[in-house]
Each structure stands twice: as structure tokens, then as C-alpha cells.
Length: 244
Length: 393
Image (cartoon, rainbow over all chains, first blue to last red):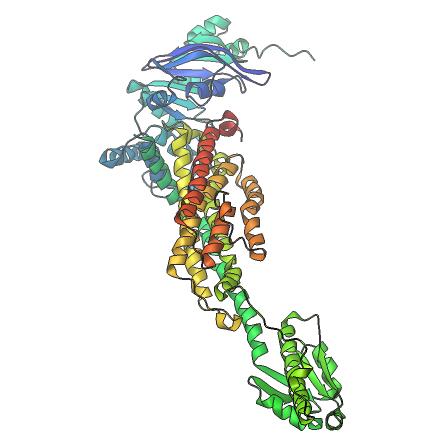
């Protein structure tokens, strides 16, 4: 259970996030939808404890993220905006490293790592250095290492960015699997089809504020459009032609 | 998980990463092998030069004009007389086929018999440093012969030769041979500081600016690990590489130095194992400080290249006093001990000068650099939590 209340963040004189409030329940997939620059990534950075908000509160299972970021981070598995790997380490070593940093070790860690490698179809690549990996393989390693501590909350920032069809499908399968396991999943995207296909709930962000919050049907009704994409454009205020 | 246990995990990862990095291993090798070799070669050349003054082949033109003088020269130890054509003497020196040529005038013996100054020409090139000891040697030989013959002339006239010597110079050399060696060896602490810098540099950059450039810092910070543990682990890894380079470099340097023909330089190489351990006791804590400095500075850089730019300038700061100290020795300045790096140079000079500083100096010098290192690590940890650093790419 993730609860974000009135989160705000300013960079200089730019309001990146003006007012974001939403809940994400366990066992559901919450989609953070919005055009580029709407404040999705900033919201997620505040949620994961890397950025200090200028106002508002964020709780993960009752743990205040700003009061105790490390405790909150223990509850979350995060695929952040930048997902750099260490070119000289193998896929297995990446997952092991993050596992150890979460306090895991011994045969428990080894079996978790094995399971993740298998789950992401990385068996043949596991002991190769990631330097030569494809974009899809890199993303898989980055997600796998974020899940090594079996978090109940999974936050994925644009997980399918730059992935081919097969990799995108396996990421979607993963998200569905996590929902089945009862995880609270938040993922951000600017791709309509992905959000409508996966999400139980959609939180739409535009210009740093939540403009709509509900199921896909709720959003269509709210915008008075039958097509979700039209609804998205209308709600995001993108249909207003700028005055030239 | 204690913060130290987490730092240990980070340390092990950075070490694994670093040992797989060809670049970091190459810089380590470079500092450990190439620089000592270079300095070994330098000393050997200097020694060879001195030696070449002790055993000279002296080309003489017109030897037939002064058979007695030439015979005397031949009897001097380390002198081999060879004949040279008088016509080519100047060209031979100019072309550097000869360092020096002695031309004996045809009037030599006649003037000698009349007790007039006998003319000789000494052909040399003053701009040639390498020939200078040899020229000086030849000049001394001639002066020696001149004085000897002059003395005999005075005796034959019933005058004591000492009458002709108005002043007698007695040279008192105050520096011990060990001290003279120390001046030569003041290069050693500089080499060790250089090794500490180059050894730790690669990991320091890779684990800070490198993390930022690759975009791996943000995921790393999402783990429940205090930034201080991250900074600590990265610092220890960089320091260990610095240590490795220092120890390697010292072993290499010593091995090479022991092969330099020191006796030709007029000194005995008497650096004991205890002296070497004393040097390590000075330089290793300094390596901790230098690694922390490199780590801190490279955290500001967004990329590897940017960091290298910062560090090449920053590295001059600890190296400059070392370079200066090879010309102006820092020995006998115990009050420098608390000054980071400068203190290490000063105390090293005392160790090599055969005047080991008291234990307290080691403790003070070490404590200062370790405390500064920890402060820099703490500052690095704060940087790692700064939004402009984490997200500024």
C-alpha cells in the first residue's frame, strides 16, 4: 500500500510536481500515465526516497519515506529512470550485489538469484559480462536485481522504453505475475495501449498535477470520449492548440 | 546489517570491478614498473659518467714532443693514452667523437728545458655536460704534473717547494655519505606518492564519476544502504589499489636502486629494510588521504573524462612539493609533520638521511592524514545524496 499526499517539488522556478495525490493498493497495478515532462519521474524519485519533496507526505505500508528512507527502500523494488549496469560484472553478479546490499547472503541468496535468472530467461547469459548485452537483456538484469529482496512494492519507471516486442511482452508478463503474487505495482508510461492493457487503475498526470484517477472506463466517462487515447489527450489538456 | 558490513560489500564489488578493469591494472603496472625503471636508468647514467672520468682514454696529439710527460700520464691509474692527429682535434671534439683532446706543442720539451711554461692545448666543448668530468680530470692531471715539475725545480735551486704554496686548502665535507645519498634518494618519497595517486585514481574515478556516467548511481542508491557505507567501501577499494601501487613501486625501486653502481657516485647504498618499513609507515596513511581526495574530487565530475581533467590538475598539488624537495631537501624540519603530504616528504627525507624521526612524528603525521581522509569520505557521502549529483548527468 503506497499513499502519496500533496507531493510537491520545484526546481528553480519550474514546478515539476505541483500537487500529486494518489493511493496504490496491494494486488493491483497502478499506471502513472502522462506526457513527457508531466512529472512522472520526479514523483517516482520522491516516492523512492532519492528526492526530498518540498511538501506533502509519502508512506509505504505506513513507513514515512522521508523520515526513514532506508526502511521504505527495503519495502520497494525499483527500476529507476536510469538503469545503468557495471559493464565488467556478469548478470549474476549484478543480482548478487544488490541482494547483498539488502542483507541477503549464503544459499538463500544463491537460490533467489537462480530463480530470478530463470524467471527472466537469462540462463544462457547469466555468467557473461553485461558489456555486450542488448537493451532488452540489460533491462531484464536491471529489473531482476531490483526484485532480489522480493519486495511487496514494485515501482517501474517506463520499463518498456526502448525494448523490442518480445522483451516488452515479457515485461508485461512479469507485471501480471507480480499482481498475482499480491504486490503493489506502480509503473509509469506515456504509451496508452500499455497502460490500458495492464492497469487496474490509471493515475493521469499533466503539468505536475493529477488530472484524472480511476479505471480506464472512469477516465473515458470523465472526459466524455469513447476512445481512451482521446480521453488522454483531453484530460492532459493537449487538445488545446497553443495560441500562435 | 551494520554500516561497516555494507561498506565491506561495496568494497568487495569495487575490487572485483577494478581488477577486471584493464585500465586500472595498467596504471598500477605503470607506476610500479616504469617510473622506478626510469629513475634507475637515470642514476646509472650519472654513475657511468662519473666512472668515465675515472677511467679515461686520453687522445694526445704531438705526444712525441713530450715523451717524459706522456710517460708520466701513462703511469697514472685509469689513464690510457691514445694518439690523435693534431689537425683534426677541434673537429673531433665538435663532432663529439672525442670528449677532449690534448695537443702538445712542438716547443714543449724546449720550454721545459729552459724552465719556461711549456705550452699545451686542451680542446673541449664547455656546453657538453657529459664531457665535463673528463675535462676536469685531464686538467687536474696536467696541473699535478706542472706542480710536481715546479716543485723539483725549486728543490734544485735550494728552495723548499712549499714556499710556492701560499694557501693550503683543507676541504671539510659536512654531509655524511648517507646524507648525500639521501639527496639522491629524495626522489623515492615522490615516487611513492605518485604511485599512491596513480594506483588509486582509476577506481576513484570509476566508482564515482563512472557510476554517474553509466547511470548506475541512481539504482545503487535505491538500496537500503547509508551513503556513508557506499563512500567508505569505494574509498577502501581505491586505497587498497593505492597501497598495492606503493608497495609494488617500492619493491621495484629498491631492487633497481640496489643495482645502480652507487660506489661510482661516491656513496654507499645503505637503505635498510627498517628504513623501508618506516617509509611505508609514512606513505600508506598518506595513500588513504590521497585516495579520499581523488574520490571526493571525482564525485563532482559527470563523466570519466571530466574527472580525469580534474584529477590531473589536483594531482600536481601533492606532487609539486615532492619535486621541489628533490632540489631543496626538506630534512631536519620535524615541525612539518602535521602538514599533510609535506610532512610525509619531510619525515621521509629524515629516514633516508639516517636520522629516523621519533615515533611521535609518525603518529602525528599519520593521524592528521587519516582524520582528513575520513572527513573527505564523509563529504563524499553527503555529495552522493545530493540531488544535483545523483540526477545531474
